[in-house]
Image 1 (cartoon, rainbow, N blue to C red):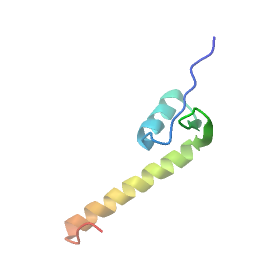
Image 2 (cartoon, rainbow, N blue to C red):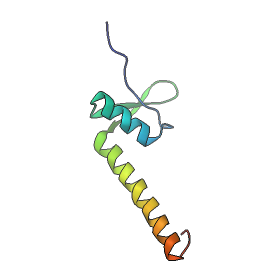
Image 3 (spheres, rainbow, N blue to C red):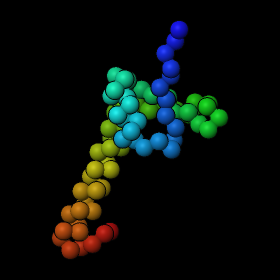
Image 4 (cartoon, rainbow, N blue to C red):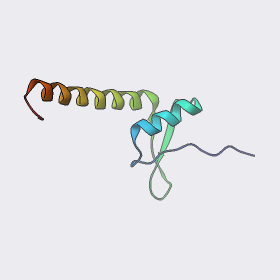
Length: 72
């Protein structure tokens, strides 16, 4: 018997894919298209980079809001 393949799609949220990678101890996850054909491979470092960029963006928005600059 074989284990089910862990994969993601381009529409999946990065945070949920990262959580799946951590839960399964994976460094890489294939990204499959609608027709289940492989598009690319998502590396855990790339997922972490995307998550950090999202957090930095949210931090800038909050800082600007508090400073009275508003959303830019």
